[in-house]
Length: 111
Length: 115
Image (cartoon, rainbow over all chains, first blue to last red; front, side):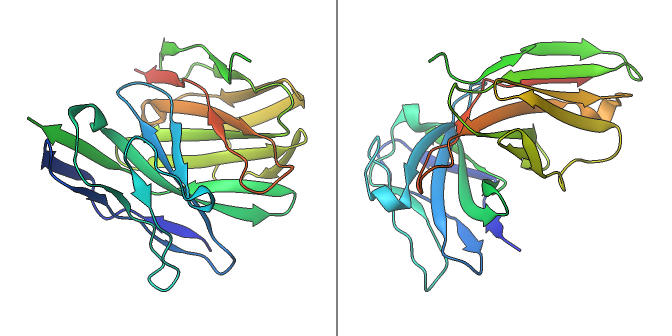
């Protein structure tokens, strides 16, 4: 069965410091991974996905199949990055796709 | 498009009462998901529809929970009878499963408090 693990419930960093939010997955098929962000009391929004290999708001994430990881990184944290971050794995089920989420990491950027 | 629309945004109800949450997916999307979010367990997939048919309901907690999708533009999640431990944010999401890499879009959530 598929599984997504985010080991840190809370990550606190100072403004300007590098950020790394960890995500590991287990899945026997070909993985498709995403990061979603949820700002305070708002809906989840797609931040980025591994197939796009893009950088959004300064964040990047590289899929490492050897380590089964998809860590989210940003070189310099900003105050507005404070939010809840969810790593998600898309898996094929009979009839379509579904997303399995990790338990999330709350990022707090302090001044 | 207005995005995924959920109602009510907030509901406070007494234990034992029936609760119905509603969702309108994005027009043209053929997959719909109900998720529950709590501090302890994060985001849990409750049920997933594809072309209005329930595909995976293994996340539905127990018989008190039921979900329907009578047509492509509407879905309900019902809890009867409700209990305090059902207090959570319930998110509806939709996507179009025609191609790989498609995005799942979330509604703003229904904040349920059972007292």
